[in-house]
Length: 311
Image 1 (cartoon, one colour):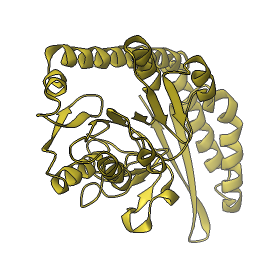
Image 2 (cartoon, one colour):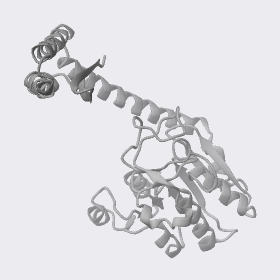
Image 3 (cartoon, helix red, strand yellow):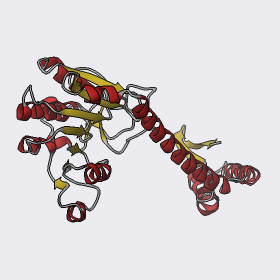
Image 4 (cartoon, helix red, strand yellow):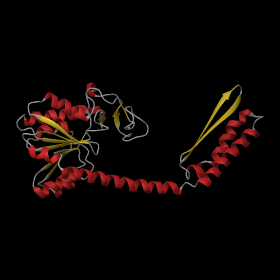
């Protein structure tokens, strides 16, 4: 039973080949779930709802894959519902994705209003970077609602898993992790699932994870090279330098010609800059940024021009 739909297609293929039934839980699946259900009537059922509304209604799952809303409240309560539905003796195999950075110790809220306020950390639509515990402007997942704080109690996916295992010791559950692809994980009883535990760290499993990592690395490398080629096609250093010098020269002329008329300096500077920059430079030279600041000091205008050429 996958919670979060990104791996559903592969699980359906597995079920069709070896036998089984896939229940996928996702309130907003990113695929045509109705068509998939028609094509796989015996092996696939789509549950279009929040996981916490569905898990307790399905009593025959042998394995759960949790890869949905990456926050402490959701993951912890998903595990608690599985425990309540199946009990100590029949607790199933549970696997996870995204149990390491960035959401090991930081909550993500796809829909913050679905999380009770008492369990919801302060959040913001800002990015994350491995070098900073604070949210940053340049990083990954800046379009999502990420908790401002990293670490602390009841914060993050791995924290939720550890808290659950600590509070439910009777099934003899252990946590197993592979530190790739933002963290692959599993909780299982070694006595009940010895083959799964052994296979999790087997050479074939680790080789499969490495192959996926290499495939993603090559795919991103190709995309980066394509973007770099496109970027360089817009950037000719000699022409760009000539354009910058031309712009500076025009600004100097504007300043000189309006030195006796300070109140015209601001207007003339804006006209000079906009006449040169917009179409000929800004669109064709995305690596050039010009910021013009003006301030009224002692009854005359001063201009401060800052130019930064991104290499």
